[in-house]
View 1: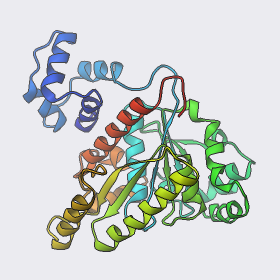
View 2 (view 1 turned 45 degrees about the vertical axis):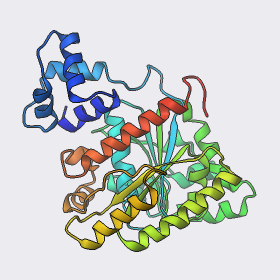
View 3 (view 1 turned 90 degrees about the vertical axis):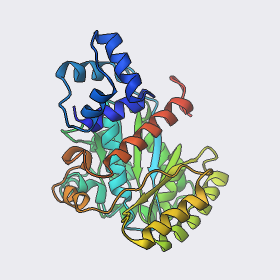
Length: 334
């Protein structure tokens, strides 16, 4: 267990470091304190195996049977804002916490698929990518790939998913196609995360229609903020027309460079426009390790979980856990 895992488990329990120390002492007969917890979370001291085992056994995670799934899409009509990185790493955190999690790559560019080292082209030739699930020639269970490090399940994409976009436009009920597909597996998962294309086309509309909540990464540059207003306008339309229960989980400022004046001004603008209305998560920095993780085909939370900004994905995962707890009854799918 790494420090980031411990921090995520603590936050999922709604505890601060003092609370966690007291709880461990009561349960295990030890004498830990806040300073010891802090050292574990900073990886300056190794977490004892007995503590790691105890925490995993008592994690505030899934019940013995998974589901119903809370469905969240990661979306922005602008490309290059970190949608796939956000979807991959948030889903990985949830899976590592013990929640049964499915990541669906709903983008024909297949960035999330390739980010995790999955060969989209080989799977497409085998008929095991998302477009075949839309076509009805495969189920989601048929195409799921499991990531060994985290146990995350992935429904991979490929370039041929672009053909599905056209087919959905011709279908009078096309906006609900993904929702129908997910209905067959929603009881089997705790969380389903959807990565979306960089546009407001049929695939994105499907994701928004199927979701309980939307997470919006926004690069800290002016045009991304302007484009976000357009996205929120479209989310309002989705609420009126296909999914009245859709909420906005929050805005994730991305590719932030604190030394750049424009980045600082943009981050300030995001807070001025949306704080108090929508959750604004801490920013994800623009650093090379994110690209390096993609190059080696691993989620950052598997390859380098202590990297700058990685803790933000733990924060987002904790927010999703709270959303699921508050929104979904144990035996009811909202």
